[in-house]
Length: 206
Image (cartoon, rainbow, N blue to C red; front, side, top):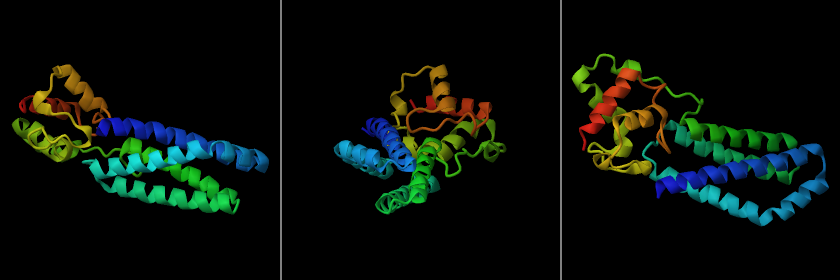
């Protein structure tokens, strides 16, 4: 359910962003007649997309296991986007409309990186002093438990039940390195040794 909502939300956000950019371009061109015609023609689709944008976004915010600072910044930016867009188009203020589009792009960037500054923090140093035999478990409990749970069965944010995983060792490593769905890629967050340790620990949960 969560994964389906995530993919739906991403698609809706892209369409929403395209429509916003088109409206912005028409407004900046000064062609009010073309803008009015576009708004009128796409009024119903725009309402549907906007509703889906909010509903899927609310669902993902409620059921995500990763409720860090990035999420609250994202929510605040969405509210600001809506306020700027409503006032900007109502008063025909190009600057406010431009800022609303920038905020929307910023929201998209936060969603993709799970970071208010579009940069995933390198956490490899935090585990440098952990013994080799405890490394995988230590990282798992620090980074993965919120979605997978201590036993690997929690299933928050669309996380798979790790106790039932049929993935090969290479497939596990690939997902940890590159991420999947709502899971971030860890290749820039952890060292290769640490990624290997996590993959080995996950296998013990079966």
